[in-house]
Image 1 (tube, rainbow, N blue to C red):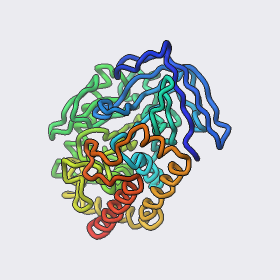
Image 2: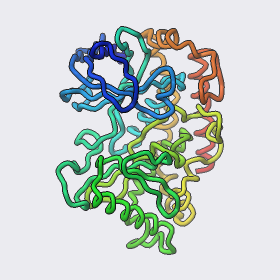
Image 3: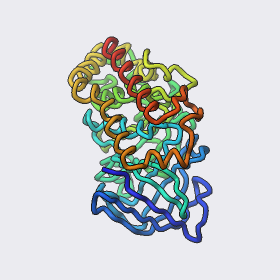
Image 4: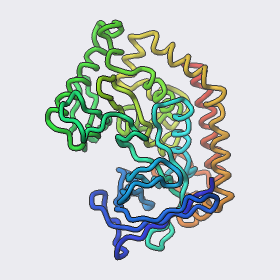
Length: 381
């Protein structure tokens, strides 16, 4: 699919000045190779952390009425990811693609778009489903309809910023925030904190692998393995333990890992840590995962089995996904327009480890990095 054209006109051409205050707007979408036209009212604000400080801004959109933008399932809440420092414009999309290929319960669907704001061309973005509770997204109990904390569906984030409404740190130093419900009641917060601590206590106990009381009483390992393989393959900087590590819990269920999020500084696009290099462990050093690996021999066995079952068809073909997706951006002219608006291909943008000087050079770099990474994991998983 060619990138759709998204035109945003804020009321009175008001600027989108921050990540708190929504601005009223009209949003129109045109897609030349489909019938997915759209026009409607919405509110829009900034989003992101370090990405909000970059020249090309990411945005959060809340439609007045639910709509299935570009054929995706209907919802009010959407995100426009700018991918400013990822000069391939594709790392997030490729990671989401792999999550879908590995069979994660839900991975955000996304499509490339070109955005114009109040008449100013802003470049190529990803239009992405936001992480939220919904039958078409994180399909767990709708917390708006529950009172008792044990009947609440939760989305959590491991987040060292501790900048949410309800955050805490476990006894082994894992920082968590409640994403949903927001705000959580005191009873809901107390319930999920107790559950997570019980899970961690079981993991670090002498009975960690006990079939009745061990860590698998609390953690859904199947979901963890899928999440782990995507993030370890991409050597995703933040996913070692910093932020954007989502978990969710259905009523009566275990802690599941996911959905995936935030890969723009993954796959070698970082210059301040060992995540830059395609060799070596990264996510495996996460506090909880490293403990699972050390106490439970079957954990690595199961990881290896999933790798073997999916490598040839789903992992080895990921470089080809970059080629195909990049070719679509180039043939549409979107890539050229983006880098005319943001002429950074020959500049170092935080936290780029290399400057290739061309779009094809960026694609070749990430493909070569992933191929080296895949080879190392094949030899070491």
